[in-house]
Structure formats: structure tokens, C-alpha cells
Length: 180
Image (cartoon, rainbow, N blue to C red):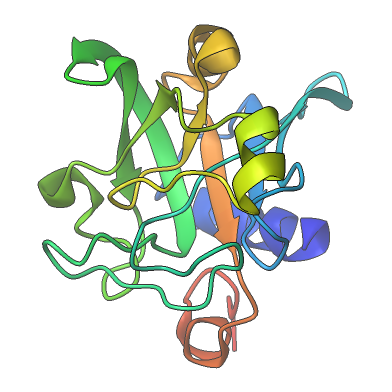
């Protein structure tokens, strides 16, 4: 997954879609929601800054994510490369706007209000009790206790790579198939 993400970032950077990011956030939706599956990497210092739980959309699956969409009101998570933009305070508290860079896979992120935010349902004890994390409406929600720190670390141009071995996305993503 890391190699795919780095390849996608290099492609997006060389194509002029993004500036060279300071951070790369990896989300591995092939892992269960009860396990840490979000990593924030400092690309300049080559350090891992965060390893966290992250929720997926309520219509994406139960403990395991299996269905992804970019449709309005799907309440599903989206795959692909996103750019972290500006934070704001909304109905989920301190949140981070995300722009999807892959039409057909995550290009409607802004329109769908897919943002990073903290949520009380992202809780390891709750996950252990019910066998899964709570689920969002498609947002990559993290523990409320770390949300502000993660948001302030990745905001203003950090890149988020949401991964799942979904064949259509793997074959059709222009960032994963740069030069193909």
C-alpha cells in the first residue's frame, strides 16, 4: 500500500495536480475497523506521526469495509487520493475539508461533505464490545482526542491515500497508472 501511495503522490505531483506534500496519510480499508488502519507520515523527516483507528461509512460495511462510492447520499467511504485543505468548525466540531482528486472515485468529496473529523464512536473500548467501530456517513472519522492534532498536522496540502484492493479503482486510477 505504501508503494502504491508514493507512486500516486509522485504522479499527482509531476502532473501538477498537487504540490509536494509534507505529509501522507494512509488509510487501509482492507483492515478491520477494530484495528489501527490510519497512518500519518511526515515525508520530510521520514517519520510516522500517528497510527490510529479510523471509521468508514455506514453503507461501506460492518467491521470490514467492502463497498465504496462517490455517489451523493451513499453514506459510503471513497477510495483514492485526496488533498487536505482548510479546517473549520461544523456539526462534528473541528473538521478538515478534503478535495478528492479522482473523478468517479472521490471527486465529489466536497459536494458530499466528506471531511476528516473526530467522533465519539471511534473508540477502541466500544469497538471491542460491539465488534466494530461506529460508522460515519463516508467521512474518515478519528478519535475525538486526536482529531485536532491530526487535522493540524495534515491540513493545507497534506495528501490522504484511501486504499482498498478494489479492482476497478486499481485499474482505472490515473494516479496508480501514471504513464500506463
